[in-house]
Image (cartoon, rainbow, N blue to C red; front, side):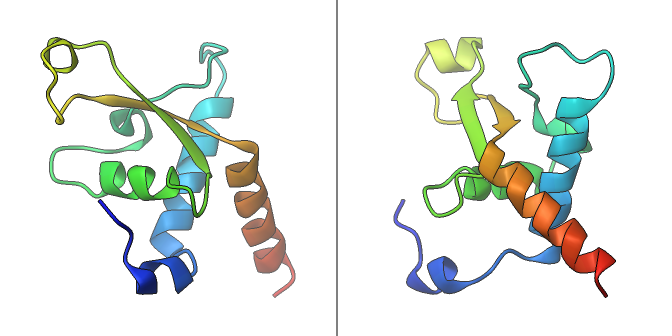
Length: 107
C-alpha cells in the first residue's frame, strides 16, 4: 500500500509518540526477554484499538522507529495477511522518544 503524500509530510502525533513511549517501556521493563520483541497487547493493545495500525506506520520507511516481523502462527503458515506481528523499538524510535521528553522538559 502506497503512503499518502500528506502522510509523509505530517509529523508524529501525540498518540504515535505515546505508543512509541509504551514500546520503549515494554522493551526496557525488568523481566522481559533480551530480544526486545513485543506484541501490541504487551503495550496495552486490544481488539479494535489503534496500536497495530500505529506500530505498522512507525515501522514504515519514513520513520523506521519500529522493527516488525511476522509471528509464527497457523495463519502466517497458510499465507494470511492477517497474521500476527512482533514489534521492537529501534534506535531511531528511542531518539524520537528522547527528543519528545527533552522538548517537554524544556517547556
